[in-house]
Image (tube, rainbow, N blue to C red; front, side, top):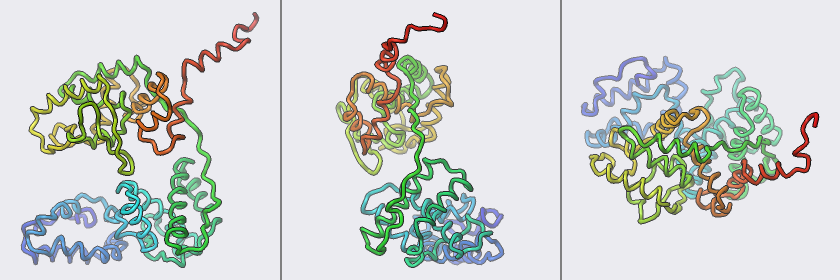
Length: 405
């Protein structure tokens, strides 16, 4: 309310306020037709009206039970933030696809939300491109609720090429970003043609993805890794930070996997890791990981954890966040005398993969350890600098010829 009206969060919208006062608050929120941001979301608010009434107009018990919804309204910079939920911000022809991927394919909420944003951008462009919306309309305010099956049928391959040009020229998106949007569009049309048979023609059947430049992963060498480990031992959270960085460098975990670890995921010599796409895998612990984990668990016992299941805790005794992990990695990189701008927590995953491959781990085993779905994702680590490549360069028969010699 405060974000869209400029007023302070109303005192008479207390979680313990009588039902009529909460009803009055919602009525005022919906009636502010003078605010264009409210106006632009009237259809959306109508669709979630039942949810809003359930939150604000029900008896006290239900209002208290759902108080996070009330609190979150005060924190939104715009009501657009609410519209990120595809269940209320997408038309049927889009919502069915996203629901299928979330409930049947098991894709994470984050992945589905990103797919929704990509499809929303796609259909906003098409509404303008096809003349359904004026070209001078605020792109971020265009509703896609009017997109139906007939409109989707009208989109051709040439229209999609226009969309890609729009992304490149008007938004400055690189090849990798455009490729992701193409992947979502391709998945959408495949669903509409082969899964639901609502479309007869797939316009993206022959669409190629933009060619992305192949970049080699950046990683720490063994000595730099030792420096980072040494730097992470000190400080109030030394046991925790050292354990986290040890797991990054030895097991190649993703940051989301580290953050999501629970105490129940620990067994005698292994961790059960929840990877991308809700896929679980077992990662075995070497001696360095086992020692670091045991030391941290000993110090964790003295903490009155609020989140009792979480393995790694923040200073607030709740589950550690991604941002905290990013910060502690950057902090210890600086303490180790390494360039913070060049490395990140994900670069530590690259480091683990590269060093294991260079020390004899075969690529198939590495694929399983890293949780890669496709082998070609893992094979990038086979192209990094290695001793064999350096030795091959030295073996050239012309390697001893120097200028003027």
